[in-house]
Image (cartoon, rainbow, N blue to C red; front, side, top):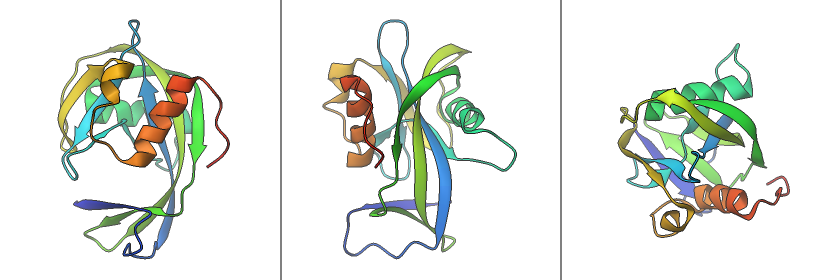
Length: 155
């Protein structure tokens, strides 16, 4: 299903659903972060997605990371909570989603890097390399919050 991101865009369609979601900052033993280049917008992003009925938030982060990157993770903490009503996703089925997203912290425990139907590339990057990658401001905010080590205010 095709998706288009709108972030603080006055021409964005009005949301018609509110969805709980998780994203994960996965950090390996050398301090690199796991990112995927999304097929729908060409931008780099953290693995993540919507929670399914019957799963915990941590289970959602583990599942989405495995599905989107091939890497198995253990959740070790939380980066922050993000609820920007100006960031919506419009899908070709008519859904316009506002997400209530919790960004988790995780470490790899297995698996092999691979792309999915949502990604064209999956790779590990040093924190310095991330600064030069194209990504949506909301994703960059999560990564910068992780890099700063500060617990952000609820957003």
